[in-house]
Image (cartoon, rainbow, N blue to C red; front, side, top):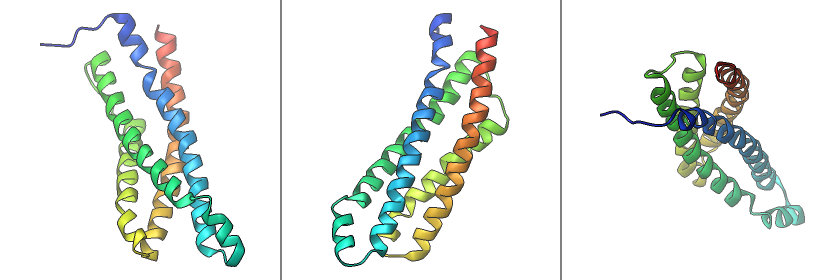
Length: 156
C-alpha cells in the first residue's frame, strides 16, 4: 500500500521544510543572542546584574532552545519523508549529511542542560562550541537548500 497524493500536493510539500528551516535559522540567531545575554548576566555585578536578571534571558534561552530542538528534528524528518514520497528515495549528499549532523549537534547540546544548571563550566563551554558549529552548518544548509529549491522550481 502506498500513499497516494495529488501532484499538486506533492509539489507544495517540497516548500514546507525550506520555509520552516529559514524561520528556525532566524530563531537560532535569536537563541544565540539570548545565550550571550545569559553569559553577560552571569558575569555582571551589582546593579547591572539585578537589571539583567529581570530580562529572564536564561528562561527564554531554554524555552527557545527546546522549541528549536523539537522543530528542527521534526522538520528534518519531515523533509526526508517528503523527499521519499516525491522521489521514492533519499538523495545522499552533503545537504542530507549536514542536516543529520545538525540534528545530532542540537540533541547533544540540549542534553548538556542538566549539567549547566548544576554549574558545570565544561558543559557551558561544550554547549557554546556545539551551538556555534550548529549555527555555521545551519547557515551553510540555508545556501544549499536554496539551490535545491531552485532545482525543484526549474523542474516544475
